[in-house]
Length: 453
View (tube, helix red, strand yellow):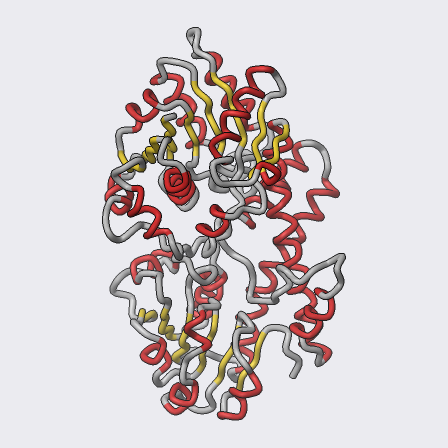
């Protein structure tokens, strides 16, 4: 078959690359109107960083994997069309700050209706609110002209930083569609694509609405666990408990488990906050204010954790950071990705810049232009210096903030770093990545999230 994916971002690019990698009998084309992004996918420097992605893209590219800006042609030739475009939180109008902005989804549906010449299977790959498929179906059916469009929901469950392994060996693949003969046939067609490498028992099929809601629910549950342990981290600091020890004790309970119980400065990324806000909006729309309030509490706790970390930095440094050089290690929202969307580092850095601190920032994969864009700074602004390595960033600094859990930070020579810092040398571990006791022996005034004094 010929498979087309509209949207060459963090989901569409890796997912299509894996399909092409696992089955050379399918021709897979990823299309996007962003010429620079497509050029990057066709170059030696891909637009996104994911361990292992370079290899699978370069192996299939030009054979059965193609990246193009010829959107209409790809739609016209495809048997299956994935829609994997951005669905940001609305910044205007009804549902502002909570509902998903479906402008790009609607444009895709209208373009498919205008261009397609025969029957198509259209697959929602973007994270969408429940019953979005009904809107897509209305647009397509209103312009069908005798063509048959089957709409499927196939939400992604990728974790950035491990996207390739998640695609290669997924916990599950979820496919939702109409429970009609034509709908079930379309579901089976997509099942067969994934069954090239995914065990059949891991491919789950549901109706459309269950599939759409499952994605939002999964992210909400995961974010809830992070906010829960972060709430406990504040109590640990107040009582002298150690949040890592508490998390380990709780995580050994087989009913709870250890995953997503790592306390930190707060969760980020493109999905968690957006999906929970979407869930809150849906609950309010369907007249469930108590449910909406419950899930909104997960977001409020995450915001509180980010503010609390910045406040702790300031209060520890004699209640002022004005004119002080603070080294920030890590700017991506998590390790092994260059994605900065909703990164806790953005919020912490903005709070410190608001207190007139001078920041030196180092991240192994995030570019200076992206850092300045996220912090709303011009290239000429001298309040932030972006460095090429951790040692340059920390030289003459008054404090170090660990804001992304990159593995290379664990291997740094902290004695060398301490010797090059202003004294007293503060270190704030926002990811509980380091051995704080060992750092204190070197001479750091080191503290972490949920570590009692």
